[in-house]
Length: 119
Image (cartoon, rainbow, N blue to C red; front, top):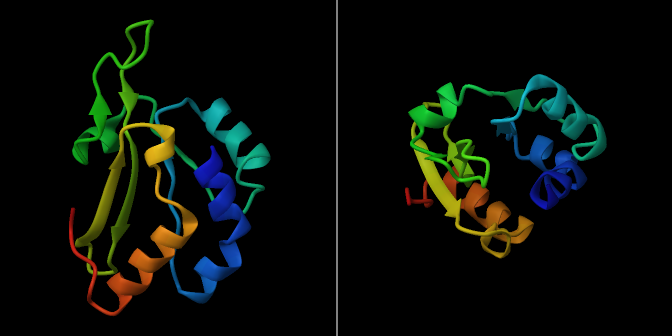
């Protein structure tokens, strides 16, 4: 949630860089809508993927990651170029490992100049 708040705070910067943010959540539509209102401050759409269809396609499903046995999505930031190629990926193992706004901004600028690499 902290990362979504940070992206919402910097939504103008993302617009200026011509970056479209597309968060995808394994939560149902109701929970994704709540996050859109309360966390993202309605600055960008949050997609609901409760069946983890898209999350699976990116290889980001942590099987039985919750105590109740449900699968969860790995916390991940991915930059995808307009041509559809992945330019940078950061899979975070824990909340402290989530990239800061400054790190993400650096990667966005590197990707736009052709310098970011896939991880």
